[in-house]
Each structure stands twice: as C-alpha cells, then as structure tokens.
Length: 253
Ligand code: ADP
Ligand code: MG
Image (cartoon, rainbow, N blue to C red; front, side, top):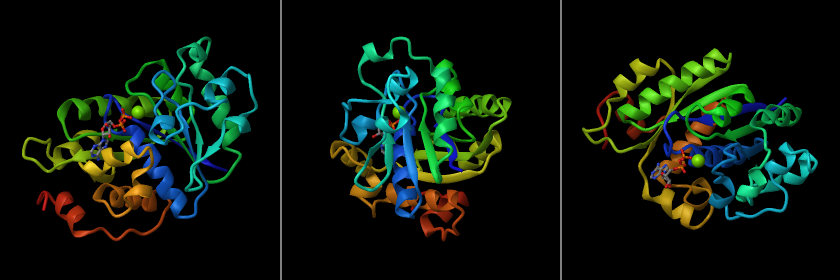
C-alpha cells in the first residue's frame, strides 16, 4: 500500500511545492514509485514548476467526477508521476476539497509514495489535504512567524489523528538574524528531517521548469533533498560536515 504524505506549512511561501517536487523526484531516483499530487487547488503550482501548466484532465476533473483517475496522471522525465490541478478558475467551480480523501483512498492501493502538495494555513483546503493523508511533513523557514504557524499546523494535524513525521527547515542561511535551530526544535518538539539551505539554484531550476534534483543534482539544496528522501524511505544516511555543523549549533561554514 502506498504511503500518503502531505507537505504543508502554516505560513505561505515556505517552500512546500519545491519540497514536494524534489522529494518526489529524489525518492523516484532511489527506485521508489512516486506520485506528486497538486492538492493546492486554489493556487496550483506543480504544473508550472514542471513545465506542464495546462493539461487536458486534472485533479479538478477527478474531484468533479468528470474523468477516471488514471487520466489525470502524467509522468515527469524522471519517472515521477504527477497529478496537476487546473490553472483555470472556472474549473474550480463546485470542486469540493473534502473529496480529496476519496482520491487518496484509491491512490493508496498502489505502492510507494503519494506526496500531496498542500496550500498553506488551516483553511478548508489545507485541512482537506491533512484529512486525506497518513503522514504529515511541515515545512518552515527559520523565522518566528513561520515556526509559530508551523506549531499550529502540527497541533491541528495531530488533532486529526495524523502522524507528523517531522519538520523540513528550508531557506536556511545561517545568518545570526535567523531563529536558532535549538529554539525551533524546542518549540516544535518534532524531528528535523532535514535542513535545506538557501540556494539560488532553486530559482534556476524553476526558470528551467524542472526539478532541482534533476537539473542541479549536485547543488546544496538538491543534496539536502536527496538525503531527506533517503531518510524517509528508511535508508541509512551519512550526514555531511555542513549538516553536522548546523545541527550542533556551530552554524554555517
Ligand atoms: P510554497 O509552495 O510553500 O508557497 P515554494 O516552493 O513555491 O513555496 O517556494 C517559494 C519561493 O521560495 C519560490 O520562489 C522558490 O523558488 C523559493 N525557494 C524555495 N526553496 C528555496 C531555497 N532552498 N533556496 C532559495 N529559494 C527557495
Ligand atoms: Mg506551493
């Protein structure tokens, strides 16, 4: 049975879509079956990030019962499967977010990983992505508003009976103005699955409309995502010197 993981955050723009796509492609590179679903129906980004902005059949059609599930599944060149949402506002009409759990119930019959890219916050759409999953990963940046909002998301996810696997800290620069890692760990009381540094290659990959781990596999951020993917799939991971320095509070090298 596939494991359904929702990538979410309290605050917007923390790096959820970047994380969902790159974890997906990194898990696929490890030989896993993966599907990334754009559960951010109101402001969908997966198709844009991967150069397929307009598709004939999307998750919207599935939620409206207008097409069979298989018709909304596309394949990235890495072999990662993608289920985009529609960019058209018209196709959002009458979509019920709560139907997402019926979609994941069917997708769970496959093997591997189903990764849901959620909207931010705790509105109806974001809650539907929590309800529809088994496990939750919360993406936060190292700053107070992002971390306090992440805490709320963790509480709501747990209230729904979901397993919060941990936190991914993204856009880490190591600057003194950032919230210290020890404070983040104390406040959130969840394992930190990985730290993804601020990396201009992320934007370069976006300009190429492709996944960073595919276009810039040796970049710092891609290496971080590959390590997180290895951890998620239960592989043993050898941490590099940079990660160990950050985790032990010695900071950026
Ligand atoms: P969300 O899905 O949470 O709204 P995105 O993944 O779309 O967030 O990322 C928001 C912005 O931050 C994008 O412009 C993206 O390119 C940028 N970004 C995300 N992660 C990084 C990173 N590690 N380094 C630099 N820029 C990043
Ligand atoms: Mg997004």
